[in-house]
Image 1 (cartoon, rainbow, N blue to C red):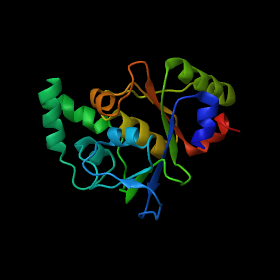
Image 2: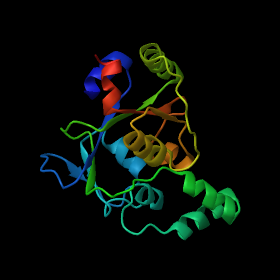
Image 3: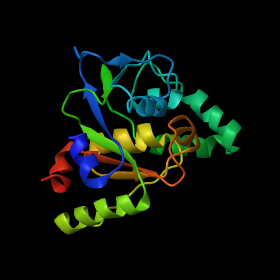
Image 4: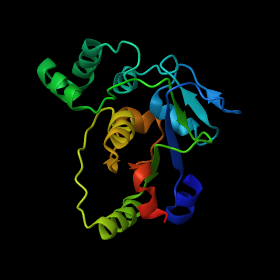
Length: 199
């Protein structure tokens, strides 16, 4: 599926799959101490499996509902880096998409039917996709943009839960650790909309 998107739209497409139990995939790398956006970049080289013990980022653990994410610690870190009040940090955190239940693990580019596809595209490539969506559905795509937890939350979790296309400009950490080029933005497409783009 990701190769068909690659052939038609360019860029690299990453398959994202939520698993209820650990899959018996062969040749899949289980990472440790990684940020989710780092794992996305790593999955371009080899398939990756992630669980709550693999992820070192508080934000990703929070949006994936893994472990016992420390809300106060996230808010405190934002106050230190962004110099915002505790109240504003709390409002922002409450607006971040979060899974209602936790999954055993997440696969990136495993040999399973994906729940969504994720890519980093140029504005022109994104425009081409949006034109196809608009011409097929007649709908205007309304977006919720954020500057925090953008790949794990806004792209992966929100696309998965709401089964809608999401676009993000990324965040400082995603661009740094996920190696998102300055001319790229992120897009997530849910499985139920694949056939719009690849009939």
